[in-house]
Image (cartoon, rainbow, N blue to C red; front, side, top):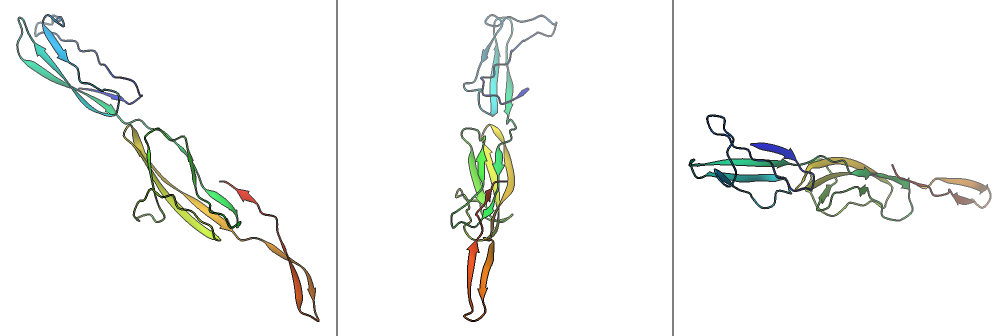
Length: 173
């Protein structure tokens, strides 16, 4: 039994066979090895050693390629209301990854990325899966802050006023 971690390369372990007396057997003369196809993606592969000549029987060996770890970059959003949709951003994803989202810790997963337009806060939970990599889970928030206003003038007699909008600012966290 052999175990290794995924790295995108074909895995070909060396098979070495010795008899009960400690003599090293010769591949092709004393035994043959059936090598499974693939051996690149995470999974379990079976090798079969078949003895021949002065030896008889067979032996099955397995090679397990374990999922690798990786850390993609996930960022939330924080900014001032601008009437536009905002969401979290993801980068550094491995090819073939599937991303699912939800807006509550125990809600239903969906492939549609949640957005927020109005003032308030939305927590986005994400789950990134890939056959060759360990599942990555986490959460980030989308925060839309109200536009800050200031009153620049008031008129007592007509009860009129002027409102000045503050400069918009957008930040990513």
